[in-house]
Length: 263
Length: 258
Image (cartoon, rainbow over all chains, first blue to last red; front, side, top):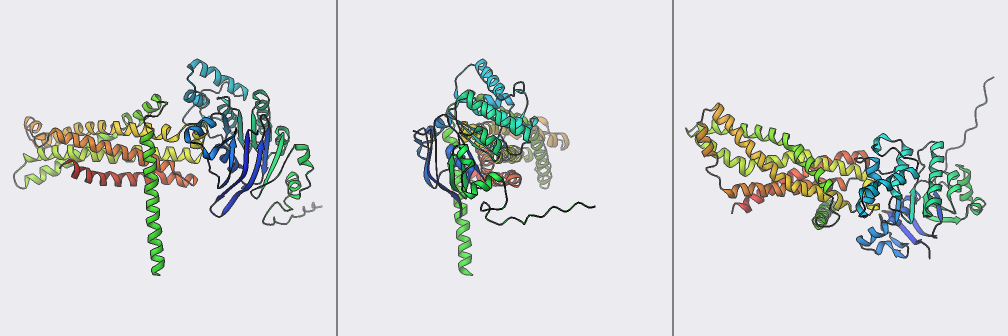
């Protein structure tokens, strides 16, 4: 049985259909990377998995439990087994790094403060952020915030990790760092992961399977090697990163020829 | 033309009912969440500090100013028909029954209601409230309940401080400036008052505290649209809670004085 089962999922906001009959299954320990242009419903997919949004049609099941049918208490129990890493980290800005990572531990586990401290240090060292416990989120760079967000997400030892565009807005070096951290977490924790990203390099490093969302539909979901040779022109255009092709609804501006150098 | 008018009136009524329903549901969920576990004492203490202790200077200053101005007006008014002695009695009645709870309520709606709306609004647009949900924490329980409890408990205490300060504001003017006897003022200030009046003042403060916290949290929680939304939330919270404080004051006065 798949750990995460997305069945005929549809979601619209007013007249705008964001997801249309999306089907995805993620097996235990598998790493799925979801690609897609901006506004194609990738984040909406994750928010449906977390139960932050309710599907218009279809459903999402996590470990066999249909999210939209759970009571609030049952939903909170399921959420304790899922770690969510937000695009902009969403750290609690009134708290220190330590308090952010310790938040879930203090709320859900009746453990001694020494154990909380040990677990927080362990999580921070896993993401390479040891020694930043006393800092406030405002004192951290974008990449550091993401990594603290990862530490907070793994503190409760979840079975599933969801990453929402973890590398967006970061420089190439930090993007590589984040990619390595995700890989380390995947191997060290053995968790099931869904990663949304635009960064093809880290996508091919992280993924066991890659899915591509296009205009609300999942048009490909296969192993990285197969995805690379997928004949679908949309997939190939996305891999090339070319503006010309069927990917864009509105035609792109014409390509200018580079001016010849002045003699 | 007529149809368009009906259309507009209809949609306005529906929108108003939708808004009222949303507020009622969130308020109901907040009251229902008061006794849920886990109890976060540190969070509650922070709110007591923010709502209560940090508001003392503003409550003292405004209560002093208003009671002094009111005493000046009373002294002037009663002097017109040689009844200066009544000024301290009416001062006492006005401060305890109306000025202390209403001034405290309005000042705190500006000070803490707006802060609650701005804080929760920022948390909403930066996905911190979603992060709370994802960490299996009910935002109503974690954010609304401590603020509601702190406001409901601290507003009556601040009103009691306001009454005490109001006494000394009246004393400064009526004894210090108008030359009334301090002994007479001390007796006359409480002459028209009964314990019921203090109970009414504290009951009003309790209700005002709940209005301020619920409206502030609700406006923040429903913030949309980035910086503009965060900017509008405190303004809207202050206007709405101030309006409801004045409306509630009228009904509570009618109800509790019977």
